[in-house]
Image (cartoon, rainbow, N blue to C red; front, side, top):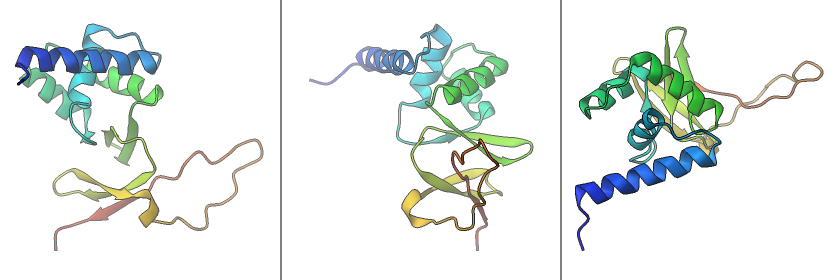
Length: 144
């Protein structure tokens, strides 16, 4: 039997609600709407602005500030990973697993590098009482 749009939307909402609860977040209407859009497809990279445009196109009224706050809450809860490419631009990655990124600056696009294909050598020992959490690598590329 073919699912209707309404049934698919209900399933996406239920999945988003479950994901938020599992992460310890209260599933408010706005969080559920944003989570439904963020996690409806495979791994993706979004900026707050691109997600705000997407949510607006879907007819949902959410301020850009709410999108920023929600993305940061999702990151703190472990649902997203923030990738900072420069001092004025960061992306939010739905793939929280071990991997790095190529950054195509001319198009503002991040491309995943599988974790096993890159090795980072010479990471210094952290100061006493601290431990290395992770090392982020962003390889800047351009079209040849």
